[in-house]
Length: 400
Ligand SMILES: *Cc1c(COP(=O)(O)O)cnc(C)c1O
Image 1 (tube, rainbow, N blue to C red):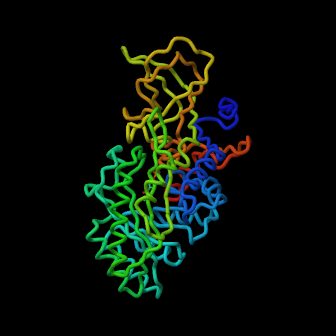
Image 2: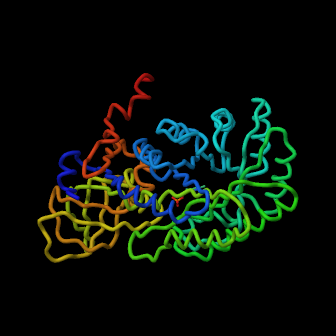
């Protein structure tokens, strides 16, 4: 990939997405569930650019959405409502109403209180709402504490005993239609065992529901499949699918999988140019034009991203922190990495930036968000313009 030419053409900081890589990841995971009915519902929050969602829509993907805004994006991008799920721990009334009116596949319910709200709103609308309940299997996914979600200590889902009560209530309601069961134990999962254990707990729950005449159609295994940021050992999609299917013997269900990071992370690159080298005592800093407002993961999770330097200088390397211009000590892209001495306008390519990159961005320090560019069949295409100062103040100006 000619990063330098693209950086010159579109300027930096810049996000680049290789759509062909996304297709390959999609097909790999989809074929792992071959022989079973399945829907891959792309977790839109990983990368919610409309052109990216449309790319998955064209591959036949569904969408897992966590706000009404994401549902609207999914529909705009061409995902049919019957392949859209609505997840998340705090949906408001307007969001629930619109989701029911849009007739999406189902809402993933995260508490008893939420189930009651959904029932009341469906009643007002004189409709039935398809629901699935997010079970919290209390399994430690052995990932970063900020991205584990399947422990009772996390805010997500309900305990098995609560879920059972909720299914019975739904079955007896005129306005609720229980169709699925859901779990999602965390993100960047790199071990099979916790997935197996969680799936087994949820499959057992499903069998106990069958025993009381509650028949579900969808077994929603969440997302979370990990990727290589560095040299991690990761899970093969085939093994992942086999482990889950092994817990479903004798059960005839459609698998719903909600991959985000797995589909987009390693298809994305964040391009940033060197502004200055600087030395504070023993400490070497490389100051670049990209910052935590563009790529938050290092600051938020201390996440590692591999760097690739495009420079004439490939001489002796020494330790440096790569930092952005934002006025926070926590504004860094990488710490203690080994880099040659760099010059103004040398390019640093940050790898694995296609998931939770642009979407977590902000306008902090009144910095305009980067442009986004897609690569497909060797061609590059702008899919989001670089923001301008006028974009940033548009909603404030009238109050002056
Ligand atoms: C974030 C999220 C996903 C996607 O997670 P990845 O780690 O990106 O695969 C899937 N399902 C739910 C409910 C989520 O919150």
